[in-house]
Amino acid sequence: MADDLPARLERVRARIEAAARLTGRDIEDICLVAVAKTRSASEIRAMAAAGVTDIGENYLQEALEKQRELADLDLTWHFIGALQSNKTRAVAEHFDWVHSVDRLRTLRRLAAQRPADLAPLNVCLQVNLDDESSKAGLAPEAVAEVVEAARAWPNIALRGLMALPAPRIDTSSQREPFRRLAALALELEQRCGVALDVLSMGMSDDLEAAVAEGATHIRVGTALFGPRPVQSPNPVSDEDPNHDI
Ligand SMILES: *Cc1c(COP(=O)(O)O)cnc(C)c1O
Image: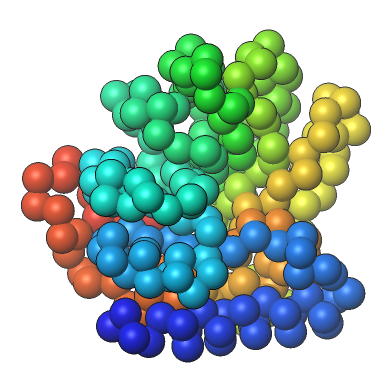
């Protein structure tokens, strides 16, 4: 219900503020990305009216339709979903950020396809921290090679790392994989001599743990928009609506 959105947003902001205060972090350093998969353009419009500036989308066709409807708004669009090769061109043309790059080949395609008249595409490399074969993401030991390669492409701004750890029960166990992601980013900065200033981590159920471990971008869906419908509203989509949910 669009009417509930401002109240939900207030609650999420209060959670971020409380977690930031506990760990002495500045909330200005934490970007809230509203994850709008399966939600309508009018719900996004209501979020934007309440002050949200950054929108995350998983499904390309659905996202492109909403972008067309919302072209009058000044929003920053983040692609956070599984990124098959046949989607890289549209993502390179229509998004400001991609959080879910998990192979060198994808990055190479995005670099080749990013239009020259747009700002460099902001990219995070998705890391598989739980060694789950079912989950997307680079193995931690495979990230350095991609970081090195990214230097060659001026229209790619490699910003940092992203993770989607398996659910864990309490805040202290949730913090453990986020801590490893932060440590990996630091290690790569030193080893490769690059700045990786972005940690995209934390969702509705674990954002406090992520903020405590240094998240700069938290990707929140359910806590902002309410529970998602089980089925994607887009019946022609070739994408699995349950991927990564
Ligand atoms: C759906 C999704 C989210 C948001 O999850 P919630 O639990 O609804 O907050 C964040 N990141 C990714 C990659 C997602 O697919």
